[in-house]
Length: 343
Image (cartoon, rainbow, N blue to C red; front, side, top):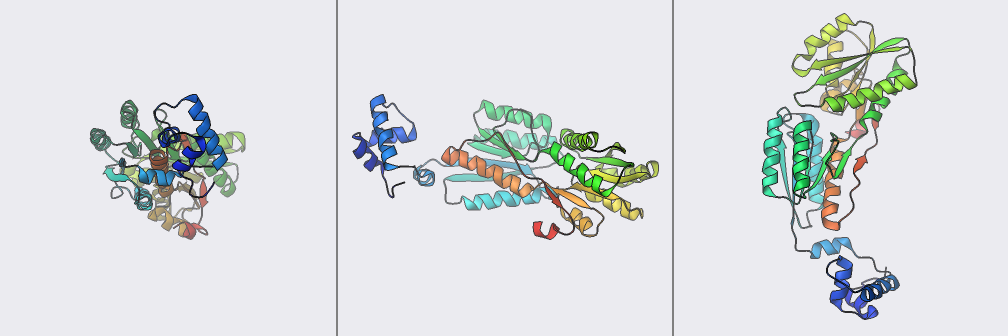
């Protein structure tokens, strides 16, 4: 690209007005076929590529971006997400963007719906949110489409009605968990998939991980008997004690949520050592990992998910960058030896 090429230079070479060049570059207004050909030829000769950053700074439009995530004070898993959002906001501080961050109670669907309706009333240019509750998230997404508001989701997938989603392939992460378990416990053995039922509707989220886990053993391994057990968060210790008493033959536990430490601590308090695989680098899980009460954690990179999701949204607004429908992140396997590099 020729340095310091201006619209005036393009207009002079093409033999057209500056206004015509502006309409071509910004794809607005009518331009005759002959003028369009002249401008495109001039652009080619000058090897001109528009600078999207400079263009956005010249644009007087201020875009409003609303962000809705679960309250980190209610669940520490979401704290890295808030950090990722903060980093992105600081990075784009020089641009014409107005960010507002809102939180909702991750145990109350109505809290999500109330805040979602409030954001709709504000009429933003774009919204990024975590679709934690299936029905309520779908309703919000339909309203966003109806009002032509750009939307991005992260962490929990939603089947329909989204522009862009950032997260992991949950099915594949389940297969990774199965591969790890097979390396720790040899056949014939009994294994348990543990779902810790939260207050919100994450059944589909957990089910995808279970489907992946089971598919690995169906295709790759034989001699494993797999049980699926669902525990409620508030009564997890009492329920898990019953699981151990009823199924003492279980050799490994694959926990599909960030509550992996609950299973690890329960086993330790019972004086039982079994293989435990789970998700997320929250402090309680990291502590158990470092004590070898948990053998592996699958890192879902919540901070990166939030950062990349918001970055995609910003680039869409500022530079009209095309959004891929889904952006899948790598599946990181964490053990006691490499965990420090992720903290």
